[in-house]
Image (cartoon, rainbow, N blue to C red; front, side, top):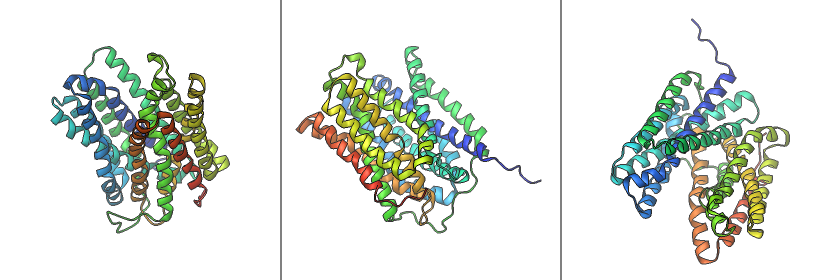
Length: 381
């Protein structure tokens, strides 16, 4: 009997579900960090060490993730990673000492990145079936899952549910979902035989990576410093310190769902050039007019600016003619992720030496790098 062909819509829904699984796992962990800190009685320094294990795991896994996807195919890797990722969440909830917690968080970061590379490889393949931009909407699903995970986290915390029970239910739902949807994942990726483990990115991929770097410097700054900026510079009451972060996250998620529609009409180059200008404008508004309304508007603009950059860069990297999608995505992700890691500490050092407003000005200039670099890339629409 011939297998029943799977529609491109079924492929798209399956990949969207994988993005949701990845997003809700990360948000579940983030929502319980204060409880894990309290449970293990960690100092701020000890918590910093624990949190550092996550990006270390992600960075170490980057080259291997691309190779594994190229070697075994994204369908097999995404299935394994999307099951192992939530299971590692259970182990985080189980950890009873900091020495148990650190390797679990390291594994969580490693598996999360493996999930990220394989899911985006699947997304590139599905996008090619549609023949138009749909990558941004997948990343919008990840953001939506983040809101969902945060809402669940708020509920379980208010009901005194332990992280272990919380993570166990999330993991069970994720594993069941993977079992149900794996058959609808794309069976084959674009093939580049004899792909080595470590590959030097070509000039095109290097530029894509630098665009991602410019954007993710700003994104990392928003994640880590938006609340502090509203607290210290905008000087809002304590209950309003998350206003800037909420503004940023809402337009970043919304922008991702609108991004594909806009790209289809005006093209990737114009969207990316406009993104850098929007990021810089938003940050400079918050710097020049540090009161509640203009700063919130500024952070809304930053969210709009960053929303489509990484999805569009990943989409272009996955169509590389010199590397398999998984390895190309790994090369670009590595460069971009460095921006996400370096942005927040640079802001801290600049704020210590000068002021937080000056550091945000520097980040605004780096955000403009998205516009400059996008104008130098030949884009295939």
